[in-house]
Length: 374
Ligand code: ZN
Ligand code: ZN
Image (cartoon, rainbow, N blue to C red; front, top):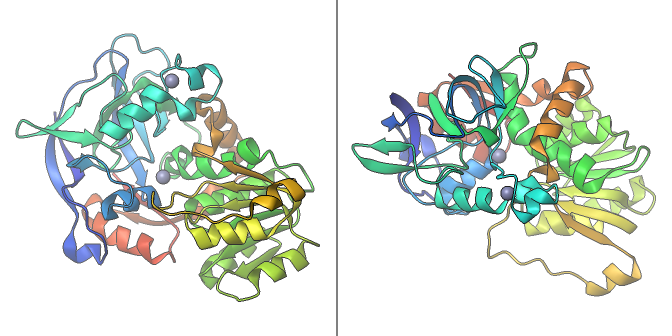
């Protein structure tokens, strides 16, 4: 079938993207779903910093690539052997499909699935190869999803049903922002009620983590960003304190507010200064978690002694250490119960044709989670 899709043809280091238009709205040919695959009609897709990192070359991927990895959609058709979804169901799409039988999958860590991440790196689907082309030339899939497209063929392992009783547009954020942010707090950090938490970097993922820390009963919760508008939003969402990272005494203030540092610090900005701030603001015996994605060449200098002498823990968190089929229904349940109001993180609703300007807004760091609505 013919579909319209936002395709990255070459990387562009800097905006304004509304002028350079790195994403070209193109008519592509989409092959039907093979065994274990699903044809999904896209409902909404989030603009995420990981997409921006592919556009700017911070996370190089094979080109041309149909971009986008956070989305909700409706199942249109299933290939042979698919038994977890059926046509008509609304689904959230997950950006690492898991094979179910590699070592990480068998250890209950599907976010680290080896074939899933291998296929993503090559721009292929989990079952191998491509379903997208233009005039006979292959177009790569982004994270097995390619969400900025009217339709997509994805692995059935990328699809998690969400039910018909929630807004399917808002549900787009469950696949990346919510899975990554809430999961960093409850799965990777395993925050306990009453423990103090620090959230550094208030994009879609960081704000989701803030909601996750609230749901987990963390207190106090300090939120950090460089934009005052984000700090105001964090207070409105329930952060007990906010600190602007540009303040020279930011670390000292966090340590004072939390009587010697936080039990759990979470870094989502994907930068060395943000990680340094998060580590410096963590208390003796505390845990620092990073889910940011810095440039692969970035190095973080660490005082090694502090790990031993202060019994510190540092953890990386990829997609919130999630088990998608377990976690998305749990987070949707919290959302339904009013305990995870992810709808408050959603900003502008854009048309596919306005996607390049949307990435300018994301790059400015001041907006909320903008969605392409199909
Ligand atoms: Zn993302
Ligand atoms: Zn696997």
